Image 1 (spheres, rainbow, N blue to C red):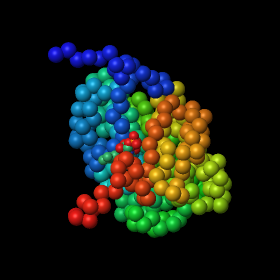
Image 2: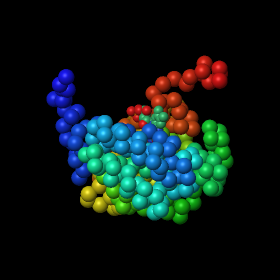
Image 3: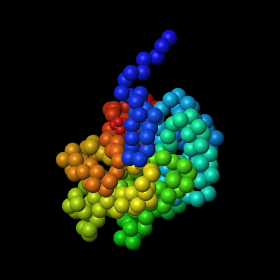
Image 4: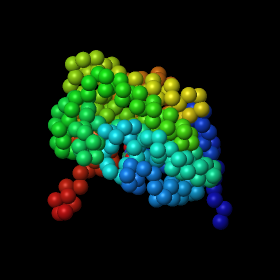
Length: 279
Ligand SMILES: Cc1cc2nc3c(=O)[nH]c(=O)nc-3n(C[C@H](O)[C@H](O)[C@H](O)COP(=O)(O)O)c2cc1C
């Protein structure tokens, strides 16, 4: 049987300097396949199967830029020693004609001391009931160093052969925790007005764009709504999107939800109260 391929979906598209063979992208969804916070054969096989299936690009999910940004034990942590294993994965993906991307983020207050190696950090120091964990407010020097860690992670992604990076600025993780009035209660230049709350994201994106240079694609995932009263709403989200565009980013992934307050909004569903009560 002949497969119909006239749809625009199957035509090439660019993300900045990177040309995809078609417009399908395997979006970042945490695989949980990285014991010891390092790539595994299982992770390689998984993304290779997606690439062989014909997507334009596949995205390795939810890699943390630093150890203290890890939510889970089986999550990628960007560091020089994992570059050869990541290179092995991107080589395999490229051999199919697909492109490779990696999502880079920091979970902020969505962790535990045992995983993060220290008390989880965030824009403000309030207790995170969802995790649950006490949280330490970041100092100014730590905020600046963290933005550089985003740049360092992009350089490691480049060394690993990634064509694109996707910066996670949504879902209530660290950048989102600075953007949202729900988690940012600072009274210094990193909090208060939306312009101040965007300062950390702006700095991260500046470092990311510098590190990405002229040959990597840069995508940012951001919230249209945090998904609850007291979170970021659509008007602020539009200002954030314009700021992301101003940074020179090549594409935006529109999403929503906040894992510590509206987790099911991320999944676009209702809280499965019946099932939760049952189990
Ligand atoms: C099992 C699972 C894991 C997910 N992991 C991630 C992730 O690592 N990073 C991310 O940005 N989104 C993750 N998501 C969210 C999805 O990528 C997507 O944003 C969500 O399903 C809602 O779609 P939307 O963003 O188009 O609203 C995950 C979703 C599921 C169901």
